[in-house]
Length: 316
Image (cartoon, rainbow, N blue to C red; front, side, top):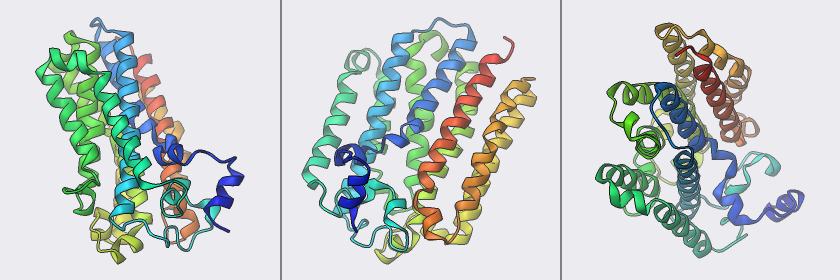
């Protein structure tokens, strides 16, 4: 059996949708929504329509980063016919076979990537022309997202992919959101600091999505001469880093809850069963690792929603 048979069981989801990986969109949605909650709690005026624009922007850039990654990993030989080797086909994430098994042609994936980036710029053009700071933040985020795997920089292949994604979907996306929804909040140092600090734990979980992906692919990436952070560390140390980032996320929220006298933020611990399950699955069993990034994405969504709920429930 191969990818066509797997897709038949999935009711033939379009290959381009698979390449966009909708299951990963919480990586962009959660930081934007958390930023919105922080701005709301600040008491500054804010715009719901601009928050919606920030959410759409985040999803467009996330989808473009994903499709671009699918294209460039295939073109540069990172994804080959042996992708998912050792795991049952129905457990391997479906986007891995989009180009490897010829479900669509590379030019279609590349065109979709460029279209998504162009659309993200189009929905922002009026605000970008009005603010040099917003233009700089937006441009930096797009460049990091694109050159995560794109030639000639290929940050992922030089162990810089984790840093690039952390910056693009952390400080840059949240600053962009603050500038969009509230000029008053954007000008306040205390709000800027809160946004930077409170988004650290969700970005640590976000990094776990990426690290789970790279940890799963250590064997194939090493064989192809690619240097991700996971390949440099080796499997055991990569697992240690994965667990440390998860522990760090919960520790950060605990510290913030104590400092802000906001015990409601501790509701993030309701997501702990998902975290424990993810930690257990980061192992040398190919079937356990196959869909781990998707499972961590579910954890990221739960963790983020709970953190937002805890923050909104806190007294002014």
